[in-house]
Length: 164
Image (cartoon, rainbow, N blue to C red; front, top):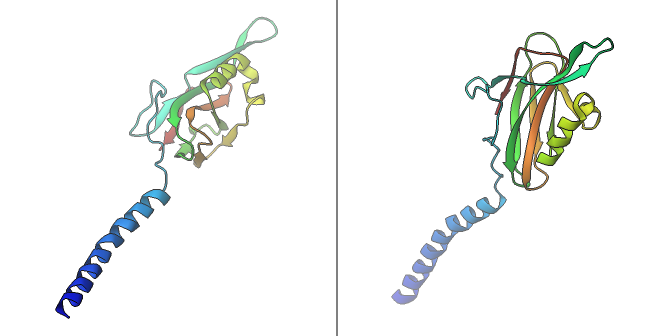
């Protein structure tokens, strides 16, 4: 009789020890994917502390009469992501009331097309506008390299803010 109580006690202790392991394994399987927190390339003046940067790239068009003008000011971030990984961030334009836009390209070759399209690039991609404090929430559809492009029409020399 003592032996069966002892065996039952061992069985209960063993079962209790397995429950936390099972819960941990299930938590790992169904847990959230890590957010994207690093970039492989960021604007040269990007400040990690404040999230500020300037739009250093420009597309130029020639006006009638031979003078040139800036049609788009832009800059970009590149990052690698796995399917389901998320990019969360806060966006804030400068204080001039100008609308800003962003889009995420799903490959570096697509970014090459962006550069080739120049002033007409916004017509080929689906930009999202922000003209006040906004949030960015995006989930990677597949494993790959992505490019987050910020731009505004015309010349812009002030800061833009993007924090993750």
